[in-house]
Image (tube, rainbow, N blue to C red; front, top):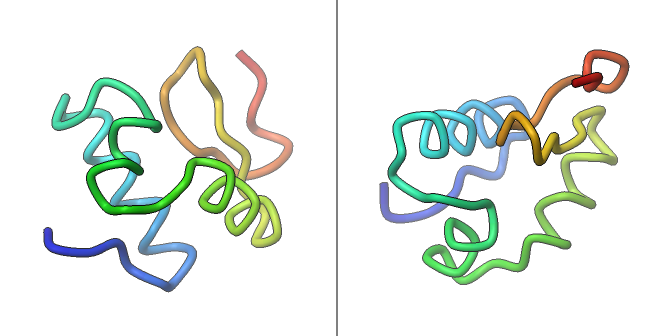
Length: 67
């Protein structure tokens, strides 16, 4: 993958896959690789109904972000 998708649903899926498959250890390292900031990604996805769970290392829909 050369760039992060712009569509929120595809972006969430891509980020979660890259983190799940251990391509990257953290959201920060993933963002650094794609020349983004974690804050920008988190704010963009928060505006589209997703929140990041540090414990689970994934974005989840708001309301399903517990533990």
